[in-house]
Length: 535
Image 1 (cartoon, rainbow, N blue to C red):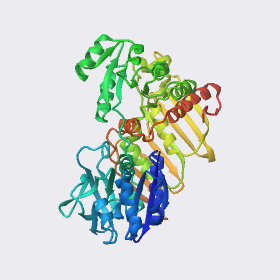
Image 2 (image 1 turned 30 degrees about the vertical axis):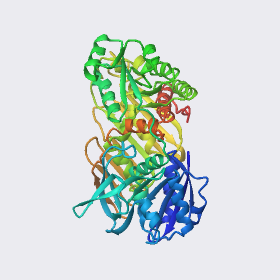
Image 3 (image 1 turned 90 degrees about the vertical axis):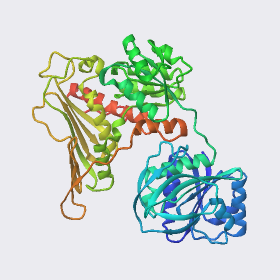
Image 4 (image 1 turned 120 degrees about the vertical axis):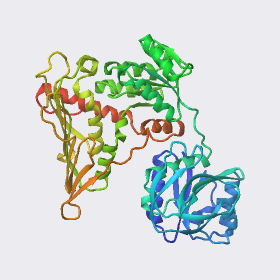
């Protein structure tokens, strides 16, 4: 992790609150450890790798300006945020180095910032809508490369750019006026990648993935391959027991794909860095162990596995071999879920204390391995894995116990349960329940969430309905679904492996889901609530 001097202070901006936000975000992204100081610290830069200027209207002394310019010219990094180019005209050397000078801005408003070209800073960073001051600046150098721009009164203006300065590198963004901008996840990602670039931490070589299981159901092998490639990684191999599916893989993915009928051979390949396990649930653990003990990163389709003991073995093996392990909880980015989470995070219904979640109907579950309990783990391991992951991301705190009610009453020709119901008790008396059924002749909403100041009702496709008492009287709000970040799961995997970003879906969070699902079945058999292992 690099050492940064975060220089802050000046007029018109809430630096005292925003600077700690930026410092925490950069540390959380494992990018840099920031020391927050004023301009006096600019004459003592010996122990720093970069300087982040987040100031407005300050005047640098000749000694401060000279020290900073020489630091960057000798190979240091400089990141300018928002009003860093609002500075006294006497600091011409600084303005030439940072590359632009503020002219004017409009009122704080929402606008869209689009990424330009292909640069490692903006790779996997989407266009962002942000509420901020729109800065109009004039160039103070002929040498800079625009990375992001936005339109003001019909004209495009740079919102982010980079430039060389001696042996050093400079990044500047016009974004970042107050807490709203500084807390924006995409702005924080842009800033973190800028810090990596100015400190010359290049991206790792593109990760090469091998897909294990290219079955025809839902064509998930092709789905994962497309997502992996869209995130800037490569697919180099496929493994399947069925020769016909290997032929399909070659047709769909290209002639240069290596084909294997044994996982041991794929895991031994020097052309594979990461394995994607898309096999029946009961062999997830064995497949992952084969990969990670050979030094390969591993991603496994949900559910992570079937038991908490299996999950722990997988986690311990990955940690011992220094490789990444994750599970494909891509539905954390479903539009209805991120909308519900936004409503809860912004306090529209107060403190959440009760969650009900439901999926199902009345009908035969079908004849295939997902209806076979020995292979699937049981009915709750299907949609229940997604729902339980959602619940654990919505309800804060430790799970104290789980109480399960599993039914086998109608469809006796298959071995999965007809209905599963899990009730979770969280610390503080909060609780959540999940029902998944194939014998529910009367259904209910997908979500019913109660808080101390309101409630959320949500179905699959309709806007999220909120009743809020936050302003003292009942207000009914229909919140349209937010737009999900495209391919967010694999983009995070790429950011993690290539740039060191935090892993969004950790194996520990996946184990927590499995521990609750397993505990629900144990509870159903015992007829009483049980504690959740690993919690």
